[in-house]
Amino acid sequence: MTRLVVLAWGNPSRGDDALGPEFLRLAEAIAPAAGHRVEFVTDFQLQPEHATDLLGRDLALFVDASATAAAPFAFGAVAPARDHTFTSHSMSPAALLAAHAAAFAEPAPPAFVLAIRGERFELGEALGASARENLRQALAFYRRLLAEISGEAWDRVARVERM
Image 1 (spheres, rainbow, N blue to C red):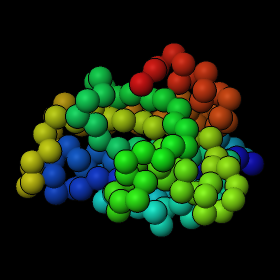
Image 2: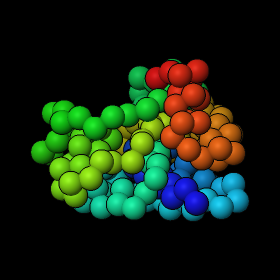
Image 3: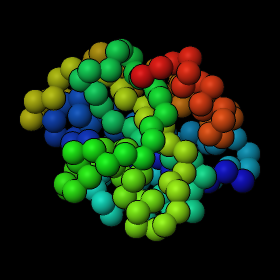
Image 4: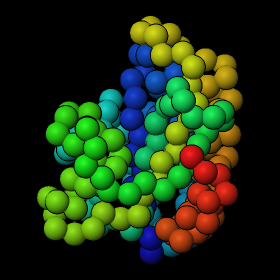
């Protein structure tokens, strides 16, 4: 049984920044392939405490809105790295993976980023129409990922999709 954790973050009060939490809300209703377990974690931002969410996992998927990804989304592998966010309260997926390895003296699980294109991030805005379409396509892609939940399979997909 593969144990997947999906970590999504964003601020629902900032327009398309809600893409991560909205993805997670909708993804919870999508059943994984038989024999796999998926757990979901959401927050306003990745924080050092989220390193514990990687414990005992075989695979991790990080989901966030992106103002720079090509529409509708970008998908790629992420490796542990101590970047400029390593000691901050808002961490990158790479820094979180590095923090996990340092804190627990074990390698982080294979991890991937799904960056959903957003365009409107102003306070008080709703999720935009193009963001909703990008979200729809990201959820369809997630269904494809669930058909074969493994780091090797997702690596093959990432080489095709490229971030």
